[in-house]
Length: 253
Image 1 (cartoon, one colour):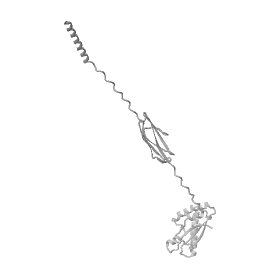
Image 2: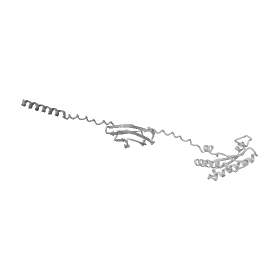
Image 3: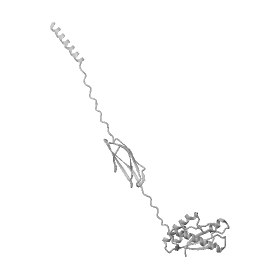
Image 4: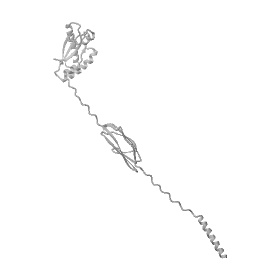
């Protein structure tokens, strides 16, 4: 009986030990967390690559503008490396396509900007002015000199006309060395025919002498008086009389 009691006691103690050991056993470690995949890196993005203005004349400026993201290197052909965002003036003389290459960890992206150089307008056809004869130039460019009533001296207000006539006559004489000009003296209708012939002669001579002082040769200019015989106006008014008191230039005979 003692043997059985001892065995039972030992078995109970062993069961208690086992139960106590099972109660305090550590749980197994959790499984490792999954490793996150690295983020996917996309190709560079060319937000815009433009030329403004896109059409120019040869030698005029155009402005290239661009914006690029996710790029570590940006190149524009014929310009070189540039920053991801920028502007550059270009001066093409012919139509040009500017090519951009943007490179990054995710690859390469390309883009183009076109600058059109418009053809220069055709030059206007040159028209050669018809060559005038000395007589035509005389009629178009040499003006009459006018005089006060019963006077033969050149008025101050006619000095500029006299100088312009001298310049024109020098050109005319250089075109034809044999060309001669006749200076006609005229008067208004008042006074006798004989008196007006003398007055017209003095007026023609005064103009010739004044032109000689500008460097013109006296032998290139003849004088004649028509007095009141060849009026340009026949009204009996002071305005008409003033128009007739003149020295007129014509091609010499």
